[in-house]
Amino acid sequence: MGNTNSRVRHLPDVFCVCMGRSSKAGDVAGSAAEDAASSSSPHLPARNLVGEVGTESVEQQIKQSMLHWSQLTQFDSDCIDEEDVKADNMKVFLALQLDPSTRDFFNTFNYDTELWESVGSLEIGHKFAEGGQAELFHANVTWWKSEDNELDREHGREWVLKVFKKGTRLRHLQSQWPHGMLKFQEERVANWMSPTPKTYPRYFCNVQCGTLLGDGRFAFLMKKEHLDLRRLIDDKMKLISTNNCGPFSKEVAEKLMFDVGLGMSWLHSRGIVHRDLKASNVLVEVRDSGNIWCFVADYECSMGVVGTGPFRAPEILKACREKSVSKRPELFTMASDVYSYGMTCYEILTGRLPFDGHLGIDIMDAIITGKRPEVPEYVEEWVHKVLSDCWQHDPTKRPSFGEIMNLIFSNSVRIRGLVERGVTYHMDRMDWIKLEVQ
Image (cartoon, rainbow, N blue to C red; front, side, top):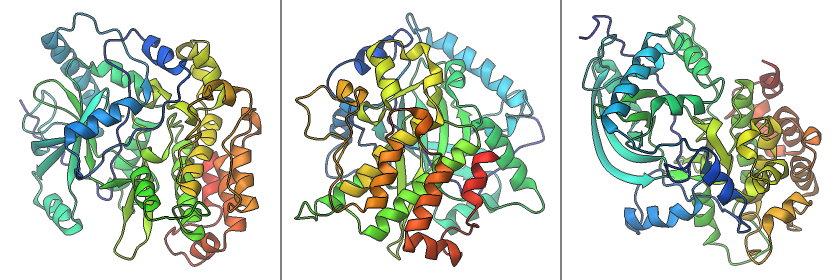
């Protein structure tokens, strides 16, 4: 069946995405997400499991994380016929492989389709995490091109597979992919095949490819990372014996804020609104030098995401309270992402979750009426201003990420030195502002 023009397109230097989506499958579109979002108890972020299993069993970790899965609009899936879903998924997948703008991103392993040969063999290993909509598995990939296998060995790359659960229709997932995601994948492949490829900044996570498994389930193949920012924060907080400081030094906190902002700026420049930014949706790599690198993750199915508890902007919470959020997609904007960024910076600076310890009050109403987390005195005035600007009640008054990056650059000696010396960022001072207008 396979076309002789086999497409082995192993793209180097890509990163993986987190999990943490969804309410139970089978809910009528929007209803479960709205009901959960309108309750008075805050929905704190998931402890997304993105790497090795810790002291708890996988089952224990998944059970604990279920309380904090992000809310996701689901499609009505009554009377699921698995054979029908499998056939329909293949139909949609072949259409994606046929489309010149998307075909380079959609590959198969272990079998050929009517249009293309497989790009290698794939062995699915143990499951190590689960969300409401998908499961994460360790994966062993052997590419047909030996040089791609050599690249994996040389860079120590390991792979994970984010597999959407049985009964999930690819056409429904396709409607949840943000505008700009596939456009960027097309741009990425074209860049890789160019005789003079550009180097993309590494501040967001990229999916290697989309694939359809032999049993009809759709999956994303991603590079494995071992840690997310929320887990790193928790580990650091265990070592702190005072309430007068956060989990990181001033310099490290500023770099983390800057890195996350760059990742969001890049996504926004591609027309991708994240809709669920929080520390548990940021992957980190701690290198031998001690440097920490951040990669904004879990945006690939964001169009159906309602977000997570107090990380959501007041305009979104108000629609959740009114149970109209699924009918108002216009509320999910770059400005609502900026609000969530402020909450993520709060995690970085304090080590705490927003409104942690305030379970006795209605957090949703409090945020809608203007309440924000209390910022400790040890946080510098200019950083406090960044948070206050991001938390503006009026979305039109919140800064862009270009403005945020410029404010951090102007006030942080650490960031200014790294950028001016070309260390770490390899970008001109104006690059992050230019991202806003591409």
